[in-house]
Image (tube, rainbow, N blue to C red):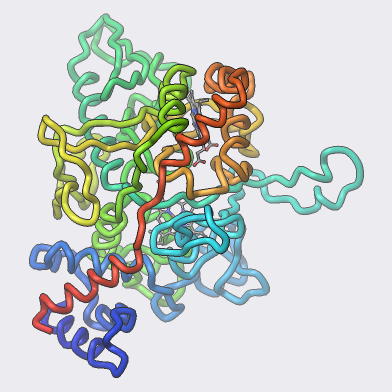
Length: 487
Ligand code: HEC
Ligand code: HEC
């Protein structure tokens, strides 16, 4: 890609008869063909240009000629890279992915608070955008629904996941990077023959014990005894005690890692490895630079907003502290640095390695508040830690570990919980507080509140809102980049 070719394309797009509106800037024209972003281009592109290129990746419907889909396999093996498709149409499977043509299809609802709902770029997905997975050895079995009698009529196996929004994810990533750095330093410094507590930003991640030789003591699965809260507890793993806030299960450490999986799972789009991994005849599906731009865009979307709480809402804010909700839903986290580094390739345990682009989280459009230690305040209402949520919320393979739902923006983002089963906030609160859930005590306290106190909690949660004007602001970005190129 060359900047000159972008500016020519911009001039073309803006010079169309209705160019008074920035809606007419067709991003696909700016970056198509030979104008594709390569990793080396990032060094010469402005932050705005990178974000715009990333926005295109997020909103672009990929085509078969560009690598969408998995190739026309007649004998699908079940592996993600050679999936079949319904009636062999090549573009849609639904269970186990191949279920969207663009990121925007599933991340587009800014608010469900009003009727009709409000759309924008980067929001949540509704019920019909939920992803259906079939993992392990079990498959989604529709036959169960045809059987008569008992619960089997209602129980169809499968994993359902409802799309969260991507707002504020740069701040989340910065907090998790710094937590990982803290945990890794504690592990490295832990003395032999001792049990050492692991803590990051005030959150406990259990402990590790080193034996006389200085090795971490593990159980039969290789998991470090006493360690908790992250996705990978195997002492030998390169992901050991790496805080991974993304995904409902807290299994993706950065937006970049998540985006690689999303491109492949939903669309069969592979990041350039120089091979046609899915046998569809297209080799360069996503360049490393396009992936980098996408991850910068995702991590530089707007930040959820908190309306100033008054009266009842103010009382509600105190009540969620008093009854224990904020032990997991920690109102805010402080970072040491306001600069988030994007990396390629990523080394999980060292978030400072291979940084290619750095962004200032206090700048537009994130606007995180600067704190006293040179970092930012991230008002996420979560601890970035995985918790056991009880058998009721377990997915079909019995796994019930989920990362704490971040409550910022929660007033706008129904349906709730990982699978969207809770259609209202109060349902969400009650449903994750079964007796065998780690949230039981807090939810039990909530259930014991007077009606007026419960209403105060809901009034407070109603102040936590998604950002406004995502289309308008991103259109302004498109215009600005065009202007910077001399238009
Ligand atoms: C078919 C619907 C669908 C499409 C298309 C889709 N997503 Fe998602 N997205 C989801 C779901 C569902 C989740 C939750 C996944 C999980 O919990 O593991 C999610 C989660 C995410 C997250 C993590 C958010 C968080 O805070 O945990 C990111 C980042 C993301 N998607 C980016 C993308 C990108 C980039 C694309 C396009 C390449 C994309 N998504 C396309 C449904 C979709
Ligand atoms: C032990 C930790 C823990 C405690 C305590 C806790 N929660 Fe949660 N909360 C979670 C986890 C984990 C999830 C995500 C569950 C899922 O995705 O299925 C969650 C999800 C939620 C959601 C849904 C968010 C969404 O966007 O889907 C709400 C609302 C919520 N909690 C409110 C509360 C309130 C109010 C309290 C206090 C009564 C509370 N929680 C106590 C861990 C906790």
